Amino acid sequence: MRHNAQRPPSVVDRVLDVLNAFTAERPELTLSELSRRTGLPLSTTHRLAGELCRRGALVRDGGGRFRVGLWLWEVASLASHGAELRESAMPFLEDLYEATHQNVQLAVLDTAEVVFVERISGRGAVNVLTRVGGRLPAHATGVGLVLLAHAPMEVQEEVLGAPLKVFTEKTISSPARLRRVLADVRRDGYVISDGQIELIAVSVAAPVFGADDAVVAAISIVVPAEGTDPRTLVPAVRAAARGISRVLGAPRASRTSATSQ
Image 1 (cartoon, rainbow, N blue to C red):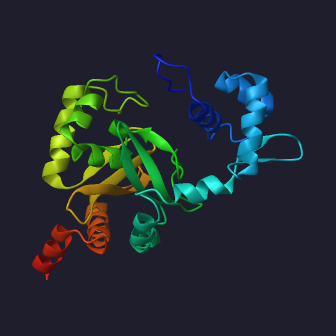
Image 2: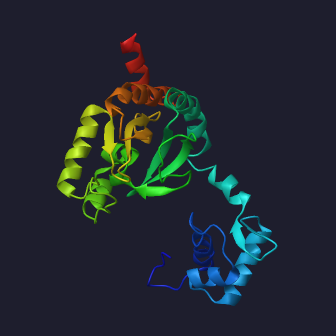
Image 3: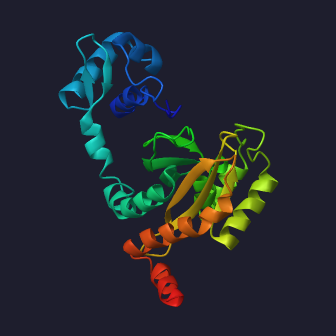
């Protein structure tokens, strides 16, 4: 719950608290669980959940458990980083997947976190924690490092000034090291993130540019750390990122394509 201490929560705050109670780990909740997780009275929770069900934002099964409804997915698809970005990226993501049959991901930045808006994965792909709609700290992921490197300075400083969550012994935990990595990403145009979230996986990520030549997203391929040379994947990932950027109308992508011919 993100309430302003200067005023009591509004109806909108309470509705958002109800929706925010659902997580990937707890996609189904009873009324009492909703009440407990939101801190709202049972009667208030019952009223709000009922209204949300009537609008299709929540659905209730025969056992009385609530889960997020499809109407919210429809609304979410209208986000600025939604359908157009995914549709532009999908052919290139599919090509990357077919070449490796490993995890291919598309993500955008939300302050200190990345949100995954698309992911393709095969049965034999290395295990990853990501899912469509899921979030991870930007400093600990390949796509996050790419996005953070091109983010406004105030966003970078906010991340650098906060504790950096550690997942493995390889996770970047030093602000000084993070600054160096971000500078390298801007210079090189890609990043290799090795074992930051899970030691068994390494990712190669590159930026996607929009019509104003600003970075709007990042793509990555995640492969097993053992037996893989991630450097061999850099050209393919960068080419896919340029292809998506070209479809989105990025001038720099068109210039790069003309130069390479």
